[in-house]
Length: 496
Image (cartoon, rainbow, N blue to C red; front, side, top):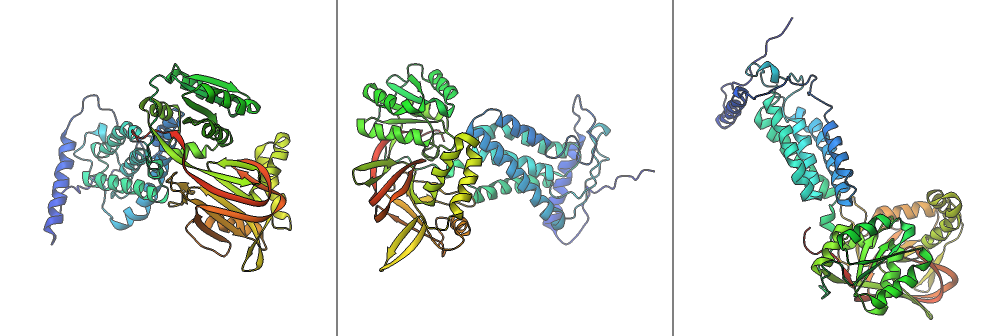
């Protein structure tokens, strides 16, 4: 037994003339689409939604983006999927409860194009997911957004062409999807929102084919592929690959003959290169080649394409450098410098990582350090000594935007971002509370202040100090200070 379609395209008279006119226009557009005949039309896929699962298309699209193996494409794919998931939640929570509009009649449609969904009609869930994915991708990467937009548009239009939705319902779904993508951006900012300002500009040579660039690549960071890609992009650049123990010596040799000193490696390798560049007075070109690459990413350099564009166009800025000194010992840091529990964690991890691997060694280091019944530091305030678990100084102010981890939005602000985790019982709970509190929040376990210079007196012998992932021992008086605009670094200023 079959049930005839109920014609819902005709509006009923009521007391809302504007709404009645809008619904009438919606019905006319719907019938106009139904009246069109498309050559080569195939039967509509079976199932309540038709075709593959609601998210299969966007999972495949995200996989295709991620296959490009560029950080920007991977972020765009992740943001697109996250926006799609958020739009699905919004449709389920708001759509059916807000408007109980039935599906349109299928009678005007050819049999080959009919779908028979059984759920309510407002808004279109598939249009919402399509718009959310395309908008999420575009917010992270406009270029990839232009590629995905036609696909999302065809998915949305197909909901009308197959008789599944009225045009207004597709537009409502698309608006909801775009709104979900922008809501996600408010919670987790895009890379473009956290790109530092292009100042102060620096005068540097433009290397159209890389002539005068000598790049030293740390082979332990798996940089061979990146080094080859740079050589392809800048054929006259010189690339020197070396083992970790030879990095410092090779950087000094390179700086002596180069117009621009290049480096490819992790943050520790970049720290060494910055120290050499400061001593020789040459600009630095950073190609990220480590695991985290904090400095390169905060600078806005993610891959070979970014660095090559900056070198060809001669785009560079001056950035601040942090410096620590203890007696005759001095060093620089581009990211962070800390004393307390974190350097001890790094030291404990290094002792075990060569035997059991990095992650297991890190877990054991956390358990060992936090279980120890002592505080690594003490501070004197108003004549009273107080225990501390951690003192952290960032080269530039770290800001938390939404739910994302703290990032620097200005690498030349002249500030040391100092954070302190107070001592006490249950150190693991206190450290976790300090991490969750964020840079702009005050809590009993956490304090933050921005200064240009910091002096630590009466530091116990053997105290560990970590800087950009490296560890050294300090004692007595330790001074942390800023060197404003001391380092010139290439970075792409246009094309974001």
